[in-house]
Image 1 (cartoon, rainbow, N blue to C red):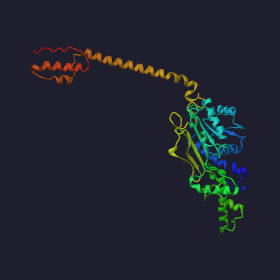
Image 2 (image 1 turned 90 degrees about the vertical axis):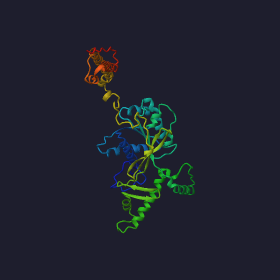
Image 3 (image 1 turned 60 degrees about the vertical axis):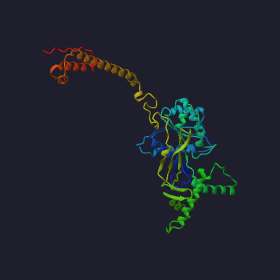
Length: 414
């Protein structure tokens, strides 16, 4: 049962069941769609295995299962490293190893340990805006999984760029439109179980509460439908018929629309958070909603990435993961180093040639000062006693325009 609900699916042909409470495959499918959107195909995954919850280990297994289903034109390269506990030592090993093969790190670990990795990234040269960190949580809960609020960062130090490069993905709780339903559930819980929710916590904010509430309503809807069916084979007491009635359909229940796919799985909607450089806090930049087809980005809340062009970091750096590939390779170093010198020499040669050409042109004008061009001769075509004055004026104007001092000689009139 557990694998159907929180891990890779069992053989559903021989084990007819419906995963109505969400699945790890759904969580990791959303992660892979985010990676595909940004065209990040080289990814390193950290899994923390010894925590109070099996979510991180199961999500890691589901991620590997999902990668197998991706079309070949998306060449994902997935490196997975599992540690029992995330400590300073294991985090250092992970960062040094991940740096050699990818620019994107998926952190399947508690929020507090993801925080530790972000703060340590600067020590390994990975807090420069060129590395992406993705933390996946099943739900937001202080003191256990992790919350978006714990990734607020006010300090102006080297670690800030790592926080600006974080994506935080978690269960999308019900909105304010369900305030009345939240109040009814809270009152019922207090009356029947003597349990009181805090003012900052609502029942449907917890994915387990909402999933459990939805399961009852989904079962009731399918049962009523099969009892009222005219099909003689359909009967409310038949588990197989109930499974069939719940498969590959969209239901409208108290908490909204719910879609159960042809694999008999209901996946939970998710929120995608990114860092707001102005408020220094995480904000919702998009959602993953199954009924609406998957990724939905909020244009008004887009990320201002801390790269030089404010665009998402590339999947593979220009100089490769080692920093010494492509144009940065050893064979290209000499060319890159000599390029500025070559350009400078070419510029100097061009200036020398131009200066010499200009000097030769002015010298020719000095040597041929006595020659008059046709326009100047035509302008001097006057008669009588004014011819001397006209020729003198024309010559002075011609050489004054070129800043050439010259004495104008005018032959006497016979």
